[in-house]
Length: 234
Image (cartoon, rainbow, N blue to C red; front, side, top):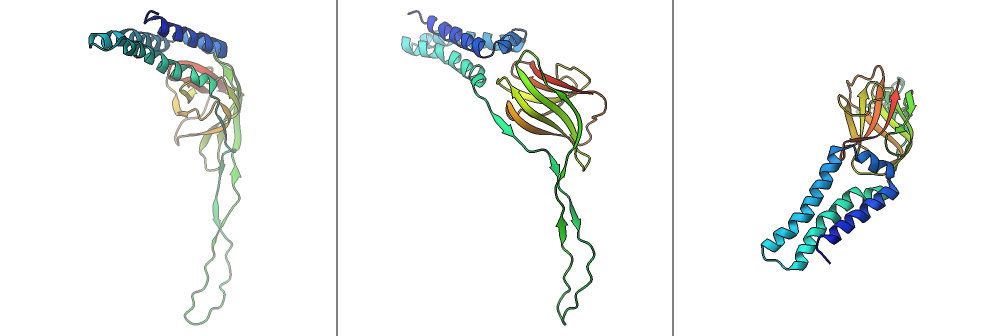
C-alpha cells in the first residue's frame, strides 16, 4: 500500500466522523482561516516527515509511522473533544458577610481575669441579585441555555450560565463584549475558559468593568477563531 494512502484514509475517516457528530461545527470551521491553516499544517507534516526519514536512511516502516503521527495528533485534538462532554454544576454565586454581635454588658470578672469580648457572628450568605438575562443562541453550533449578568451584594458582578448544553468542541472561552449581538470578542473582556459544555457555571467579572448598556455574553472557540454561542443582555 502506498505510504500516503493511510494518512489520507485516516484524515478522511476522522472528517466523516466529525461531520456525523458535529456537522454544524464543521461547516462553521470552513469559514475559519485558522481551521484551514491547521489542516494545511497537519497535511504538510504528514507529507514531509516520511521524506525526512527516508533522507536520513531510515527504514520504510518508520517513514510510514512518521506520516501517520501528525494525522493522529490532529484527530485527537480536533475530533475527540466532540465526544467528550463535561458537566460543571456550580451553585448560585453568593456573598457572605460577617457582622459584630450586638453589644453585651460586661460580665463581672474576678481579679486578674479579662472580661470576655463579643465575638463576630457570621450572617447567612446573601444570594446574588438577579439582573439581566437572555437565552443563549448557537452560532454554527447546537447550544441551549441562558446567560445572565448578576450583581452581588458587595457590588461585584458575575456572568452566570444556567442550563447550558453546548455541542462539545476544543478550546471554548467565555467573553463579555459591549454591544448587542456580537459574534467576535474584539473589544470584549475575556472572563475564562469555558469550564464545561454542560451545567450551571459562574464567571466573575473583574472589578471596574463597565457593565452598563447592552452586553453580549459570547462563547468563542479560540482554536479555530469562530463563535459558538451568544446572548445579548439588554
